[in-house]
Length: 137
Image 1: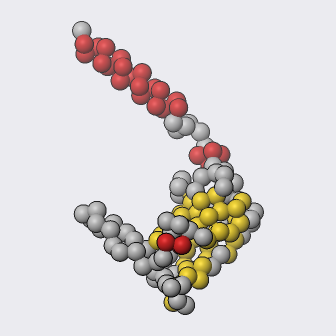
Image 2: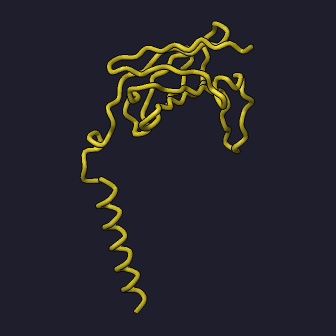
Image 3: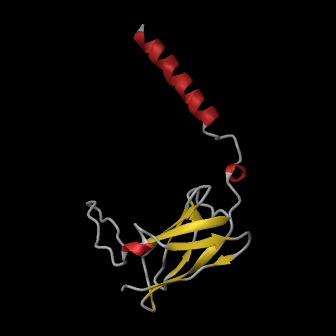
């Protein structure tokens, strides 16, 4: 008697997940308007490779980026689409990363660039080039 009830519950749950998850909708239609954000991050005048950036708008979802070997980045929305939402935005930049065991490397940047960030800029509609020239002291 319990098996049919469990099968029915599994089916109901599957139907609810499929109808509420948006699998039949166009994912791009659910995204906010995103605008390209790219640039370079330097530390003491040198490109900063492997830094993680988080773009935190006053309203709307955040975006992120990781700098390449030349310190260049391109913002990506959490959906995987390129860009960030328009408006005033705080930016957090960190160099600390976890290894396979979950141990974090030491942070190379002062707190004013990450946990107590003072970095701000306004994402405008259209293309945004924003460079960050960081100082270790």
